[in-house]
Length: 282
Ligand SMILES: O=C(O)CNC(=O)[C@H](CS)NC(=O)CCC(=O)C(=O)O
Image 1 (spheres, rainbow, N blue to C red):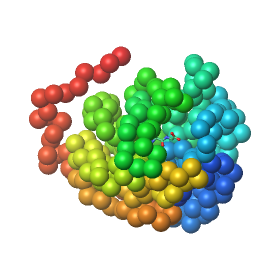
Image 2 (image 1 turned 90 degrees about the vertical axis):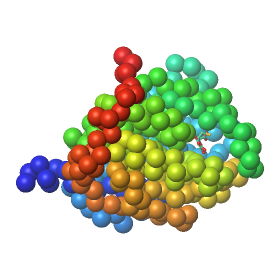
Image 3 (image 1 turned 120 degrees about the vertical axis):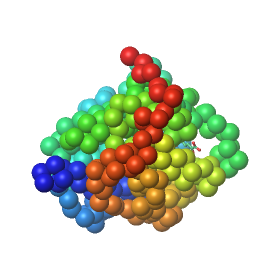
């Protein structure tokens, strides 16, 4: 019975149109947190760039902080403690080895106020898109990470990825090899590429890895004119969409049972059948 209880989690994803200034976005997060159902084991995931988005060129630099230190990260620690949740800040600019570029770090905070895990975005979005931005050059401002990161969120094995990473299934296969149960894909997916690929990519990752997926996305038209797709998703390990946030600001939240992973994997043992098991790089 104790085990069964530990297998139950509440998963929530918040979605809104982030502004350039962190203070306004923090207010939004706080008001959503007040509305969420409460549950003992609750993981709340914020989108990529949740606190700082859509400012002019170079805008994120002015807010960058050392990893695990600084005013804005402390605000998230305080929220995790106040609401007694595990809180994943989709991405935040942290100092990198290159003074001209920051790392896009995904940060997991615990209800007792610790930084449990950090992950630096591996794949940078240097892509041409047929929208009003046209040319995205994330590597101008951001330094790519080097490490695959599986977080231990009080026993829940959480794969950390960010946005464009979702297009690289080799990463998810590595996370699956490490024992992933839930895949987090905090995003700022564009409206154009989202309409074409978002649901398909996320459902495929859930189906292939037989994991739950939680993917909060930005939504709407941001201060710099960039348009994001919304449709934050929670997906089960059989690929069923449990919740889709549509395009309005808001949140989705589902009670999940990690025992479902075993049932899905026993019925269809992809892991045993796979002839292409990935080798983990040290
Ligand atoms: O640069 C910033 O301000 C914040 N970062 C982002 O918005 C990132 C990089 S531009 N967005 C994506 O990765 C979108 C990926 C996507 O839309 C796709 O894969 O189709």
